[in-house]
Length: 625
Image (cartoon, rainbow, N blue to C red; front, side, top):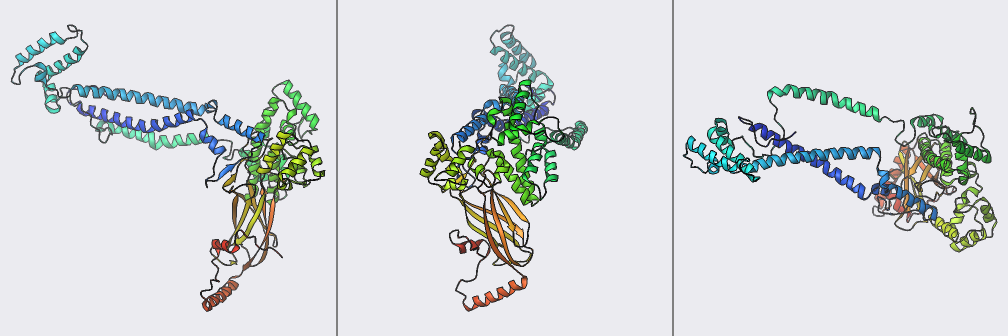
């Protein structure tokens, strides 16, 4: 939509006013949209990937704690490579970014056009400022038509473009012509009398910049509103929703895979069953077949070396089976570059599937399936065999130490300062650790990596385990009780939080050092409740709630299960007693009598959250039978 330089004759002024205010309305609307959008694009171009880097590798938590990541050589390199990819301008050039930028460019073109039109209107308005036809024609106000015509003819001979080559003469000639019209033409004279301009109003008025609608246009507007809003908007939304419908769930896993997991996970599901589900998932089957004869030959060679069996119902080994076995046996060096790229793609997808397994098992309260999913997730993260990870021999645990292979691990366990598992390795003194690792053949750089790993590996100590009802002194039947577990990551300093775990065989440094809280009432066969711990700080707190079924004495088992490391799980037993309503009332009466006899002794407990103070400085409850 454009504006006119001067209003139309004979009442064209109102249209001019509407056009001008509409231009200002569109200009302000476009500035509000284009301005912030352009700043956002410029920010992303000047500092590409800044938001993604902070989201993937935050420097501080929401509580202001400094995030500490594993600083081994391998993990530092992976983290820097990942950050470089996120900050790459080439990575920004996605189809969506290019489409958005093209739309922004079109909006800028529209904005420039509106500005040009407004400048034209405003220039016309300034040209007619203080318009006085008598002064322009150099005549008196009592001059007649003959005198007006004579003055106009004289000035025309001086200012006409054919007679005067001066560029400014054109504008002066137009003004002289307008002055002549305003004194001789009835319409121009009327416009000059009403608006001070022979062409009508050219002043700019900014008010409610909404174009007026005449009665003859109301029908068209109603039709546009009917089809554009009442029908168009719902149909457009339905089309967008249908077009955006994806086969992938919000957690990044295929919907068919999610459905298969929900149906397959049962109380008896073990790690081998989950492994079979993982390798038969849509993500595993979607991996492309060998692209060339060389790649097919390389895949066949690796399959023979690893003794991969043909799956039931298949005619040849599946590519996903070979890549999975190559990963957990740490045979990455045997894979060609294309196969290694496929493995890295699959590992990212497999990690998401394992996370989905954990969430489904937790929602369905399946502790065995949940621990099997944890075992599979750890195996992918640390590149160890899921079977050896659950054997408890300590071999898989020590394989997590940088540069320590199976043979060196055997020597380590037989050495004078042997550490049977990962926990004892982390608790050793730095000198003992260095001496023992030197004895199995690690060089100076490898020793530095092992020491950095020892600082990063979590050392968990449970400081408090408690079951209570918020705001109450007692736990009664049908109450909603809270399980609170406080634990300390002793490998962290004050004000620090744990970041990415040590996963040198995983393609990216994105696996966090996360934990799951498992709560099981052992004494009465209660079901297990599971929740992922969100607190990543040194002094962490985890809670979950459950409904108490009946009165009696209970013994419950609390477990902290590591999501990223093998062999670091911790467990703790807690005892609590549930009273009946009558027992609770009787105890309450007894307590009131006692408080009435000695009201100032402060013996009445506050219950709930305040009970923490009764336990001193994270004092662990006495759990003796």
